[in-house]
Image (cartoon, rainbow, N blue to C red; front, side, top):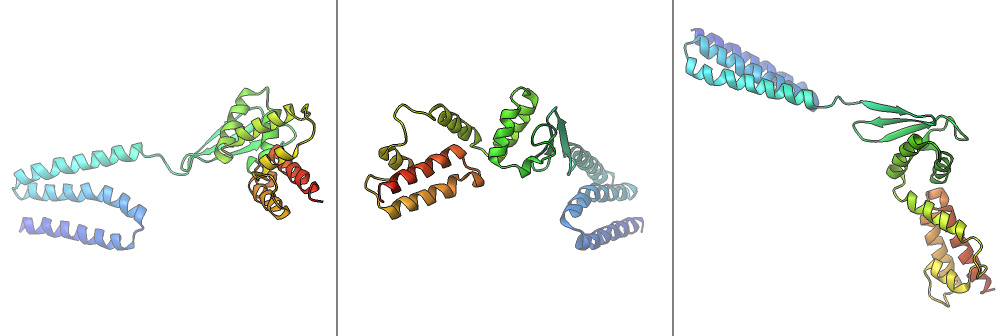
Length: 231
C-alpha cells in the first residue's frame, strides 16, 4: 500500500509536468526540465527508500544529486542575456553587447560631438580618427568599431594617403593609359564601355556607399580623360 501511495504521487508529479510541458515555451521548458528532472528522480529514490528498496534508492538518489549539481554549475557558467559593457574615454563612450558582440558608440568631444557612431559614414569616421590622433585610448576604441563595420577601412586610408602624396606627380595630369588602367579597360574601348565601367566601379566605391573619396575621384578623372578623347 505504501509503495502504491508513493508511486501515485510520482505519477501525479509527472502528469503535472507533462501539462506544463504542453504550455511552456522552449526556453522555459528547458529550464524547467533541468530543475524538475533531478527533483522527480529524487522523489522516486525517496519512495523506493521508504518502501524498503534501499538498493534501488541508493542508485537513484546519488544520480539525482549529481544531475542537480551539474545543472547548477551549468547555470553559473552561462552569462545572463542582455548584458552590456560600457567604456568611456575623453572623446568616446562605447557600449558592447555581450550577446551579439556588437559595438555602439557616442562621440563626446570635437566636431562630431553628440553624434552616434552609427550615424556617421566611413569618411566621417576616418575624419574622426584623424582628429583623435593624440588620444590613444579613444583611437583604440574607434579602430575596433571601424574594423567591425568597415573591415577594409585601413586600405582606404592608405589609398587616400598615397593619393595625397602623389597629388602633384611630375608626369602631370592622368594620362590616357593610366585612365584605361583605372577603369580596367583595354585601349580603344568605346564610349559605352567607358561609361559602363565607370558606373560599375562607382556602385562599389562611391563614398556614399562606404567607398574611398580618393578612389572615387580617380575613377571620375579616368572617365573624363577618356571621354574627352571621344569628343
